[in-house]
Length: 252
Image: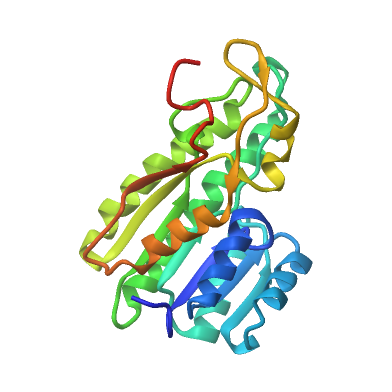
C-alpha cells in the first residue's frame, strides 16, 4: 500500500526520528501534518521535502497541552478531512542524576510529554478514525529500549516508556472493533541529537562508562513506514530496531 492520498500526523517532526519519518512519508506519497514545539525546524523539514504546501500542515504545539492538541486535530480535520496514520513520536528526557536528586518538575516534564502527550493525541485520533469514512486508521507509538530495560539514573524516562507499552496494548484492544490498529516501535541508539553524547561514553549498569554504537535513524523511519503501510487487518504490536552491538541483549 503506497501513501498516495493518505494522511499522516507526526509529532516531534522537526528533528531526529520524527523528521526522518516525516520526510520518508512525504517521499512515498503521504500528506503529512508536522507537529512540534518549534516551528522553524518543522518548516525546514517541509522545505527539504520539496513538496507542495497542499500536502503539508505545520503546527507548533506542546503535546501535553489539551487545548493545543485539540487545535492540532481540528486543523488536521479542516485541511485533510481524515487521518490514516498517527506517529506518537514526541518525547523528552531528564538529566542523568541519582534518583533522589531528581527534581519534581523534571519528572513531570518527562511524564507529561511522553505519556500524557501520547494519550491526548491518541484520544483525538480515535475520535477522528471512528467517525471518518471509511473508518479506521493506524497509531504507532515511539517506545524505546527503555520500555524493556533501564539505564542507570533514568527513572522518569524508563517509567514513561513502560507506560507507553501499557497504553499501546490498551489502544490496540480498544481499537479493534473500529479497525484502529496500534503498534509500538522500540528504538535503540538511533543517531540523533538526543544520542550525540554516546560518542563520549554512556554510564553502564556495572558503573563503567562506554562508547555505544549507534545506527542511522533512516532505519527507524523505514520501519515506521512498513508499519504504516500495512492493511488494517494486520498489526505489528511491537517491533525493536536497534544498533546491533549496543549493550542491550546480554548481562548489564
